[in-house]
Amino acid sequence: MADSKSKRLLTGAAAVAGGALSAAGVIGWRRWRSRDHAGAAALPPGQALITGASAGIGEAFARQLAAAGYDLTLVARRADRLEALAAELSAAHAIRAEALAADLSGEEDVARVVRHIEGLDDLTLLINNAGFGTRGTFAEVELERSLDMIRVHLIASVALARAALPGMIARGAGAIINVSSVAAFFASVGGANYGATKAYLNVFSETLAAELRGTGVKVQALCPGFTATEFHEVGDYQGFDRAEIPGAVWMSADEVAAESLAALRGDRVIVVPGAKYRAMVAASRSPLGGPIRRAARAVRRRWRKG
Image (cartoon, rainbow, N blue to C red; front, side, top):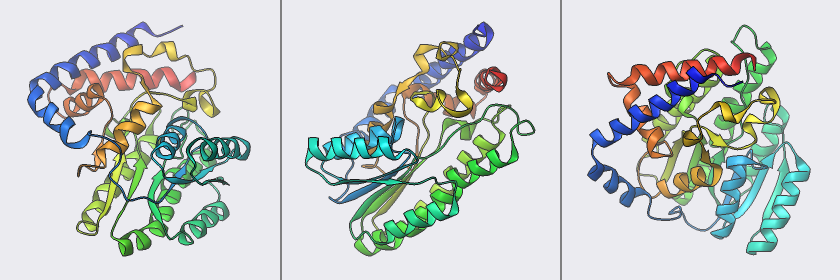
């Protein structure tokens, strides 16, 4: 049964955030939209490599990039789903889509994807999207599961970015999208390792973007909120009831991917899809942030035990 108090807190936080957005100024918001959200990603033709591409946000990226004419390398653990998606997109959009099955928690598989990247001469976009969540406090989750999260979210992302950058810099164009989360902005019970890995991705992306200024290569940390994907249906989240979270705060994977790609036309590094989530993040850093932080803690408590 849903925790009605948690739902009220989250709904109230969204309302507070909406007010904060209005206070920030509708004119500024419209200017932001016209600058960064005018269309598809402003990148040269070439290839995109997407991890976690078999479902959810990764699959949404794949479909949108294929429709825009990009060749694809699709990386995930589930070879059958990858191969089916690659075949579908190749036939539908007359592009080359290749399936590369890999478990990015394993050192050998990461090395194999690194070698693949180093062999590409037209990699335009790297999307580090692979990831997963756990339920329970840090002391309750098995150590190996926490270490796997660090390997997938951080070690693999850093290794693939390092492999992709020399070619992008030499060609004077390209982009890396590190899929982070709004969890990076909120310390909450049950999310110690998850939030910490996402906060790392944000700082890594901001610093890398500063180092690459003037090279033609962009870096983005994409920070979605609740997104309707398989994330909450597999692994530790099996049995999770989406009805416990107010419907108004959910976004679709297509919406998240579209905002991310469109934002590459601008210069922002931290990209938070959805007006409500942008306002929540902004409000959390203001005197209005108390209700939002309490809502985040309440929702995480609901997830701890299922």
